[in-house]
Length: 301
Image 1 (cartoon, rainbow, N blue to C red):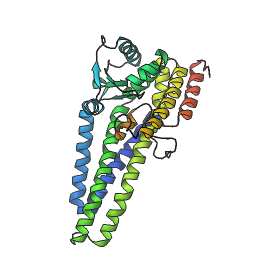
Image 2 (cartoon, rainbow, N blue to C red; image 1 turned 90 degrees about the vertical axis):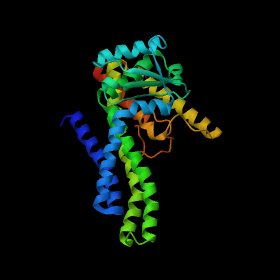
Image 3 (cartoon, one colour; image 1 turned 60 degrees about the vertical axis):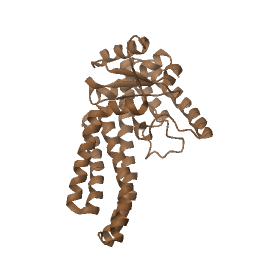
Image 4 (cartoon, one colour; image 1 turned 30 degrees about the vertical axis):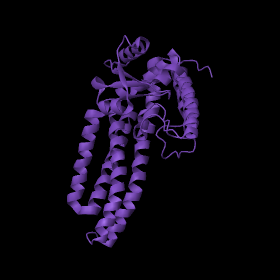
C-alpha cells in the first residue's frame, strides 16, 4: 500500500476514535440523544479548527505578520522553497520569544501561515533555517496543518469535556438521574478518555514529523543542515526548560498547540514515548542520514 494512503487511512481512523470518545461520554450521560449532541459538537469543533486555526494561533501566540521589507532574508528563503514545493507563498509571522521554534498552520495551502520565533532566527544559520522552513512547508503540502489542528482541537475537547463530565456524573448519580452501573462506566471513561485522546493526538503527530523531515531535507537539498538544526534546537530547548523550571516560569505558548512546532518544548527527557508528540531527535537524525544516502548527499557527521 502507498505510504501516503496508509498515513491518510491511519490518521482518519484515529480522528474517528477521538470523535468516538466524545460520543461515548455523551451516551453514558444521556443516551442516544447526548451521543448525537457530542457528534455534532465534534463536527463543529473540527469546522472551527479548520476555518479559524490561523487567526486563533496568531492571537494565542502573539505572532506578528511581517512583510518582505520587515524580514527580507526570511521572506526570500520561504519564497524560494515554496516555488520548489509548488506551493503558493504563505504568510509569514514572527513571535518575539527567545524559545527557538517554528510551525505552520492554516486551513489549506492558499491560507497557510509559517511562523518562527526570534529565538530560532538568532540560533540557526541560513542553511539550517532552510531545512526547518522546508520541514514546515512540507507540513503544508501534506495537509498536516489541517490534520494536526483538528486532532489537537478534538483531543482538547475530550480532555475538557471529560473533566466536566466527571462532576456531572456525580451530580446525576446523587439525584438519581444516573444508574449506579452507568455512573461507574461514566467515571471509567472520564479517566481513560483524556489519556487515550492525548496518545492518539501524539501518534498522529509523530508519524507526520518523519515525513516532514524528509520533505524538508529534499526541498532544501541539505539533509545535514536540518539534522544540525534539530540538534541545536533540542539542546537549546532543554536548556530553556531547565531555566524555566528554576524560575517557575511557563514556556512559550500553549501545551495544546505544542504538537504543531518542529520541536515540542513542553516535553522533558522523561516523557513517555506514548505521549510524545515528536520522535526522539536521535531517530529523526538517523532518518535524515538515510535520506542523505538516497539523495547522494554527504552527511558530515
